[in-house]
Image 1 (cartoon, rainbow over the protein chains, first blue to last red):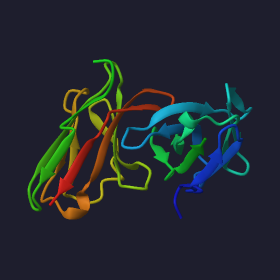
Image 2: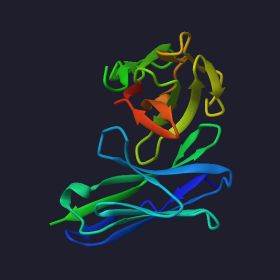
Image 3: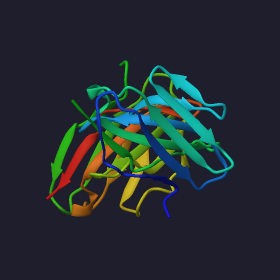
Image 4: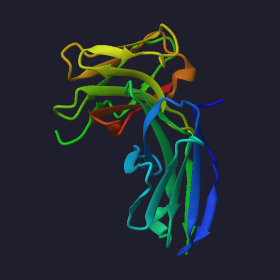
Length: 109
Length: 112
């Protein structure tokens, strides 16, 4: 079983839709959590950190449930430019960051 | 430079050859990571440096892979006796801490 698991998708949604991605992690010692975005043939880039209290950045909302070892990302009012692969990332206190295999989103006009 | 710099951007080598991949991290970042990524998969952890020392090398697949960071800045990933299965994008990242990493654009290695 992988340390970080994501539904690979693909998710194909129309513009304006709301879409949610889920991620589970197995290492209960994990300390910090992130969502990264990766465009085709580009490097991953930080989208947002994920906090236990939940956090929002514009159209993006991230949630963390430590008890269930579950992380989510919600995108509201999807734009064509949101099309990308979204990577769930978990970091242990020792510094190692472990990535999921990503969920692919395609937003269509 | 402003970001993580990796060279070369592309490398084609013959099976059995030795390759070196270079990473120049963001100035001041003490943590440096190497990952590799194959098509359809997320970045796979290889090794993590804190300063000059390898804090965690548990992801190196076998003894053909080795990485150094002698002065705590630039790092080199070395692969001996390359195999076709080593073909991937090798990503370097550096971190100011708190688990946030900034990636370079990667080196696309193709072993023929």
